Image 1 (spheres, helix red, strand yellow):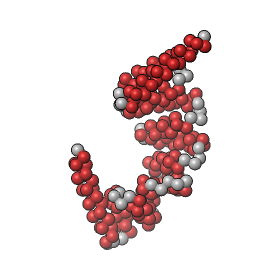
Image 2: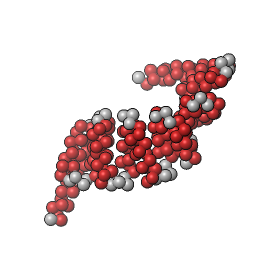
Image 3: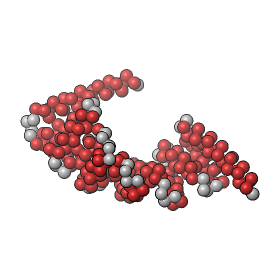
Image 4: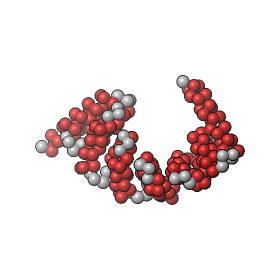
Length: 224
């Protein structure tokens, strides 16, 4: 009996490795066949569910990916990776409440990962809960997240509350980190004009945003 199980596991491991190779080479449908064969043979082979969920997500079959990740969570309620990936899928489908629930569960399991607070903040922002968004961004920053993206997101949340002075402060921080962030220059210009319609620095920001957009188009054409 033990020998039989061992042989089966070795066979499934080989199929799993083959599936991973197919996944890495973007042959998602073929990889799914491998992972499904494993699951039919052994429903406790959790990595096959996770790998298949990744394939489904690349194929934009998010509901199927969520089903696989939900099974993992059902079997292993402390699986942080499954919560994180399911939250992203919910977020991509604009199911922000469900995403927040998963991010919150993830924070209970690990309260020191800044990107979890950042992503949860983004969900609150899309739900127009700007204060909650700001609180989450602040927590992410306190934990060490210093990307241009989080400062830009913080700025947009204050902007949405019509706190243009604070929004400008955070747009400026985003620009300090990424001098080529065209959208931050443009958004900062609009915030400045909301305070003073004749602010010359706002027009300078608009010119810079336009310049950066043109440069990006040229770079994209060069790559094509």
